[in-house]
Length: 173
Image 1 (cartoon, rainbow, N blue to C red):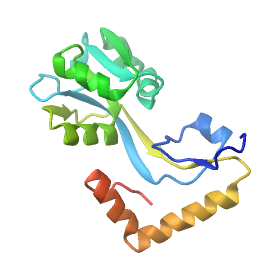
Image 2: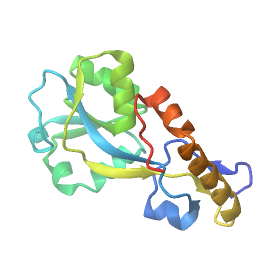
Image 3: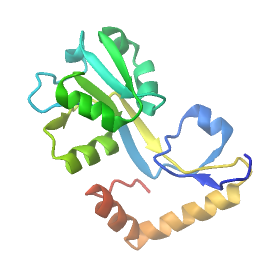
Image 4: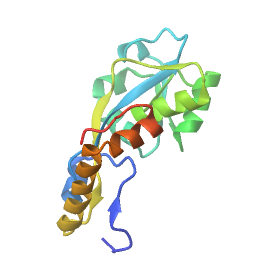
C-alpha cells in the first residue's frame, strides 16, 4: 500500500486474509502443500508420520497448512522449523527429520534439480492456488495483467514458459 510495488507475483497463495487486504487475479497455478520423505522410507500416508519428526519452512504456507490440520499436527512427535526449504531437505537427507512439508512446485523442482532420492506422498496436506496480488484500488491494472495472461494462454506462450521451468504446463488460466 506504500506504492513501492505494483503487485506481488511470486508463488503468492490466495488466502481469505490476503483477499481482504488486496485485489487478486483469478488463480493462475494450482498447488498443494505436500510431504516429502526419503525414497526408501516406510511412510506412505500422513497418518504413517504419527510420532515422527516433521520439518517445514517458518512463516510459509506449509506452516499454515500444518496449523489447519489439527489431527495431523497432534499426531506428529515434533515439528522442526527451517529458515528455508533447502535446509529442511538437507536435514531430511541426513535423517535429522523424517519428513518435510513443502509446496508441491518447490518439492518437484528441488527433487528434480538435486537428483536426491526423495519422493512425495500421494496424500497432500492442503490444496492452494497462486494468484497475483494488487492494491485494493488497482483493479484496472489487475484486469490488464489477467487479460495478458489469457492472451499468453491462447497463443501457447504460457504453456511453453511453464513447461520450460516446471517440466509441465502447471497453469490453470
